[in-house]
Image (tube, rainbow, N blue to C red; front, side, top):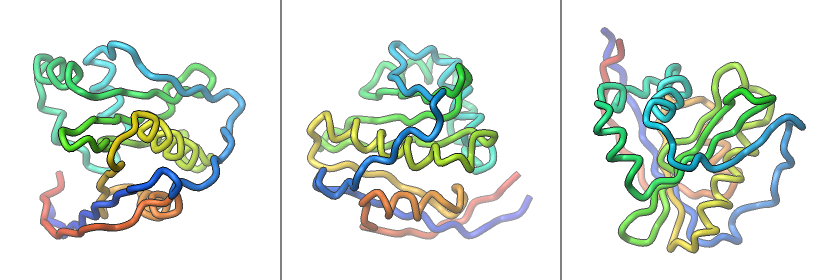
Length: 170
């Protein structure tokens, strides 16, 4: 198993005015809505499938009880579907400091390259700001999709901190 160096970048937005103009929904069959009372196994599916190519592994070992406890917390899950099929999601998680973290965000592989990531990120940020937080923040790393960091910067986030670490990949 190879060990690789990873750069994690933390980004934030402190003013809703920093969010640029909306990108129109790129697919007329697209629909975005919050998942009320998200079933734990559906959340696990989204996490596993969106994160498969990017080595999202931390939650794959969680038990049903751990997923249920997480989903009972201050998170809102939003699902993007295209023609009825899951295409992507984001998770907004309220923090004790009145900030909102975009904890997870992504588009399933077969839906990438259609502009859905720009649309989905814009909506994630807009929905986060709708809760009137002190700031909206997230982090990404060099294991994520190569378009992730440029997308975050283009939507108005600014880098606030970077850290390096190593990870062993399967």
